Length: 338
Image 1: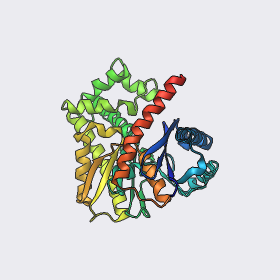
Image 2 (image 1 turned 120 degrees about the horizontal axis):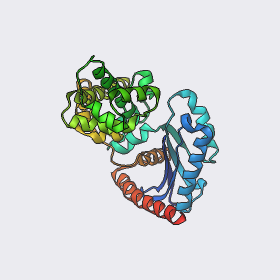
Image 3 (image 1 turned 90 degrees about the vertical axis):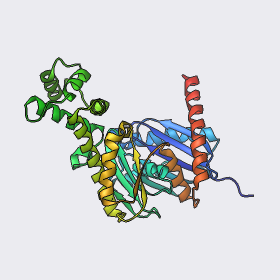
Image 4 (image 1 turned 180 degrees about the vertical axis):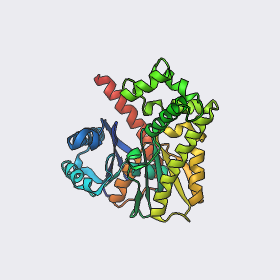
């Protein structure tokens, strides 16, 4: 009887890092969590620390050693350019992992986890925004730069609020109509009035960033036309990002899933419908789905692929069910240690 094989998946983010180990049936046997690992924020030493900490926890939880891993998938935030591949591989080599592995941008595990067939497009809108795609064989990848407003890609929460503050200023200088965004953002910042808000925003006294995005949704839901138009702009921007990836992968005539990942989509139809309409103009066969499971599941599936195993629906479900149990175990362990 062949011994059970184990597969590692790691999702490295800008705020936290998750590692999961599952057996060939998809049953999770170990889970680990660490802090941020995006090298743009914490450097490559910080990436190494996040990987070692999270993977170490997962191995200990499963009673395993690194040599027991038969395949590994790493989704790493900040992996945006080919020039970053070699220094990241050098970090991964320090893990003493002998199994085949694959390194991808952290958007890809969300796509693999969220799309039923494991391929298609993922649109990410959280603090920032991103868009990636994979073909059926996971050989061709499409992507955007991932640098948001710097390269003209929108809209995550940061870009949405950035634009909202433009509109508040335009209303104040009488360039555009009045909007209840003004009063809502004055209240959010704790400013005295709109002039105080704008002065404090420009001088850095008031920090108004992505965390203020829910204010925009609340104002739009109240019927404010400026806020509604702002969310339509954001949906259109995200849809046009997807256009680029669809064209790169020649998906225009395909039937495929577009996975929506990130907290901005919690805002609902005011953002999602213009996104849907925009994508449909180019790819009418696209179907939007929300990511409902942790992206680390996609990383494990990539690890399974590297080990020569295809993850069917039953494996995906087993991973989802067991990950919830593992997370609860991890939280209880940390609580007892505290």
